[in-house]
Length: 211
Image 1 (cartoon, rainbow, N blue to C red):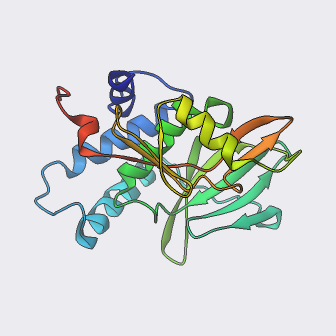
Image 2 (cartoon, helix red, strand yellow):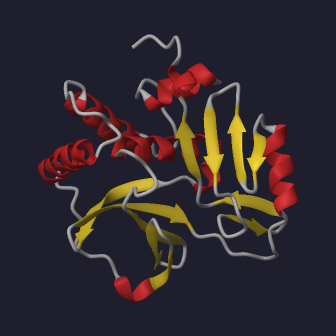
């Protein structure tokens, strides 16, 4: 599974709605590869954002017709709008990640582990000079409260260890999965739907992987 995931993040293997995400992630990796700037600095983030916006303009990925009257909710990292009653649009500024590439990797990992709520990247928008990725996701109706013990049991069966509260780690894969509270995992007819996940990859994830 680890090699499969690394191939997906490298753009070598397909995943649900992954083509656009893989293309942009690979573009960012290549465009910043020669940069001497540390990835953990604001300067790198500014350089990456400029490179991403250049790509967005060249590929005509800007979105100007979001119906803001369909507002549903928002959190620290994203704003949510209803789309045709069947989907939601999520505007995410990647604030939880050091880089945009890390954010796109998060989406790819989500689509691999939870294809029933896969994210489809449809474009980008800006508000107050803040860049947002616009992703579409299936709308999930809640039929009963989510049991977080059930969430924990499900993840443990799939190789994740509970590290604290609603955060998990898969030691075999080198993947961190955080913030799985009952607003990010919904229950519909007894089935868990992971709608908002925060994946991080550790250095061990890429260990011994041929570039």
